[in-house]
Amino acid sequence: MRTSIATVSLSGSLTEKLTAAARAGFDGVEIFENDLLASPLAPEEVRARCADLGLTIDLYQPMRDIEAVPADEFARNLRRARAKFTLMNRLGADTVLVCSSVSPLAADDDALAAEQLARLADLAQDFGVRVAYEALAWGRHVSTYDHAWRIVEAAGHPALGTCLDSFHILSRGSDPKSIEDIPGEKIFFLQLADAPLPAMDVLQWSRHHRRFPGQGGFDVAGLLRHVLRAGYDGPLSLEVFNDVFRQAEAGPTAVDARRSLLVLQEEVGLGALPAPVVPTGVAFAELVTPDAEPVTSLLGALGFARTARHRGKPVELWERGEARVLVNTGSAALPPSRRRSGGGTPVDGTCLAAVGLESPDPAGAARRAEALLAPVLPRRRAAEDAPLDAVAAPDGTELFLCATNRPRLSDWRGDFVDLPGVAAPRDGVRIDHLSLTQPWHHFDEAVLFHRAVLGLDAQESVDVADPYGLLRSRAVSTADGAVRIPLTVGAAPGDDTAHARHIALATPDVVAAARRFTEAGGHLLPIPANYYDDLAARHEFADGELATYRELGILYDRDAHGVFRHCYTRTVGRVFFELVQRDGGYQGYGAVNAPVRLAAQHTPR
Image 1 (cartoon, one colour):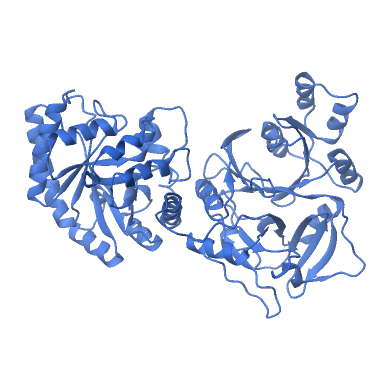
Image 2 (cartoon, one colour; image 1 turned 45 degrees about the horizontal axis):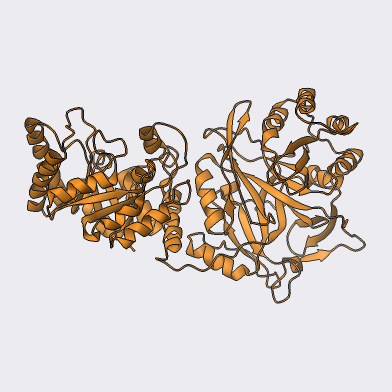
């Protein structure tokens, strides 16, 4: 189906918004009135610009407080409508959105509303315009889609239909099944948006916290199925009011928006994409650093051995158990998009710039990524290098789709030369999870990307208290936990409280691992004594157990499945490591302990 986006969903001038929508592959746009009023372009120039970009103008919006009002007020409304219909003719738009009234002058009188909307449609028809009547979730008297449809049906005018908006329907908890009772030809327009499920005033929720489909908690796909069964064949259009999106660069936001519609169409059977290829594990994490000594000293204390080096690049392979870390000291190793932190400040020192994901079909995974607007990154490689596809996550992290020691698949290890006489410890250590701090304006986009492109499952969003604000975190993972990626973001554009990204190493005995690390000269993050006093009040421990945790800085958590013990190294550059022990099927990441960890990382040393 055709796809469209409301200009209010994007940042910038009207010209910038139109360009971003076209480049992302949208077929059309909804022109939001404020965008047109603020534009220096005449309506005819906007029309020509859209035509040059290959965009249709699918909707002009909105007209407000039109219906069920006193006669003198309605006469003024018709005068205003005549001017707007004239403007729409100049603009080349043939459908106008009319929102249910919130005016204190509006009467609770469906017959009057139907009569006045029919008169409005009479006038619109003279200009070749259709009127799409939409129920606002906070409308004064009309706030549900079925009520709006009853009024449209009673008006019985061919130029009057309804507009369905997933936010207004789902935010009120309305059952969308009755949409199927509306004739498809009377559904003049469909607007789609997702949203988280907070408890707040619905107007503030709508104006500030909408998201693209797949980024929130609404069943947008279920609603769309009902609309399609009704016979709707117009565009799928996004209308998303979101403070973050309206401050972010329009181009990436438009790509994220289009990706959401591609995934939504796949979910309801409207479009075919290459099938998801879910990763089966983490092949490696790649650290880029201008000075290898601090990070290699840290890896050595963690028990890693330097086992190989790249045949043509300044990259070393460090291994312990099944965990592999690449240390890259090349001056151009860090992609431009990762040369700044989430807060916009230059990245100094060591950083986590790339992740290798084990894929059962790397080529298939790359095809899906490209289909979902995540192009495969060009790579400089010698003729003898392994063919290795990589895609860029929204934050610029390079995600390599690769295979390790599997028949008939190119092995990335083939690019490395083993160092003689060196063997990595084989002790069951592996990468448990990778925590990736996101730029403030890429968080929701990152969640959708990892779900849609990589086929990972998204868990519920969690807010974590930091001494200087709140951090938001949402983990994506495979069903079996072989790949776990918590995505985190600070509370504001300049918030850099997350300090760094980190690599969590799973170990069968975190106490023994912590002792070996400190005995090898490593420094664990000190944890305040007050934390352990609180643990003693909340849980019972074996004799000496809590004293050991206190000595080493080990944190503790329980869930319905099991127990989690973990501790942290101090930060090197913008990277630190975590040692974790999961027992009994523990599912989480120790979020209850994150405020203590963050406070400890803020403490000067």
